[in-house]
Image (cartoon, rainbow, N blue to C red; front, side, top):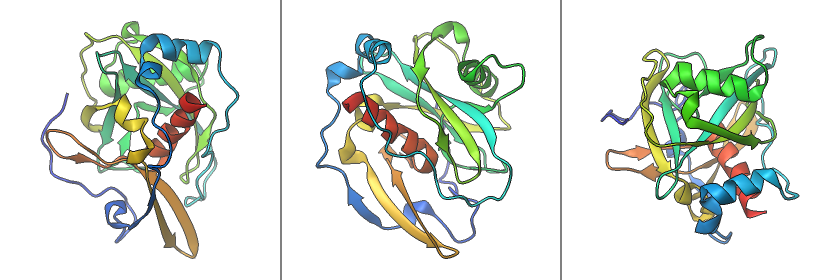
Length: 233
C-alpha cells in the first residue's frame, strides 16, 4: 500500500531536519551483497548456520532521560521475484520517532512469549499483517535507540498475497523498498550533527519510489546496516 503524501518533518527536535544535514561519506567502496544471497533459500540458510560476524551499530547516544523499554521490530522481507523490505512511515503526533520510516513493531507486553511474538503481534496490530504469511528466520543483536528503546530486530520472510490495514493512529503510509537497494553500501550515506554539545552520527538510505523520496535514517538505517554486515560476513 502506498499513498501520495507531502514531505513531512522527520524529527521532533526544533530546527532539525536530517535531510538537510551534510553527507560526510558514502560507502561505495564496500561490496554489495550478491543477489543470490538475497533469495529466500539463502536467507534461511544464513540464519540456520550463521557466520561469525560483528554488528556495526549497537547503541545511539542517549537524548531522552528515561527508563529503558524493551521492544521488537519485524524486518519483513517480502518474497517477490526481487525481494523487498516492508516499511512504514510513522504519523507525526506520536511521542517518539514521529514521521520517521520504521519497521513494524513496538513495545513488548508481559504476555509475549519472546521477541518474535512481540514483533508478530505488533505487525498485525500496526499494519494488519497476518502472521500466517510470516516465517520468522531469527533475531539480530539488540539495537538501543537514543530514546531508550532496547530493540530486538526479528528477521522474517513474508509470503506475497497478504493484505494490509494500517492503524491510522500510528501509520501514515506503508511501502516496500528493494532488498537489493538496501544491501548495497553505495546507497549508505553517513551524516554527523552536533546537538547540545554531543556529536551524533547516523546512516541514511534515501530511496526514490514512484511517488517521492523515502528518507530512511536513524535506527531503521542502523538495523539495516547491521543486516548488511550479517549477510556480507
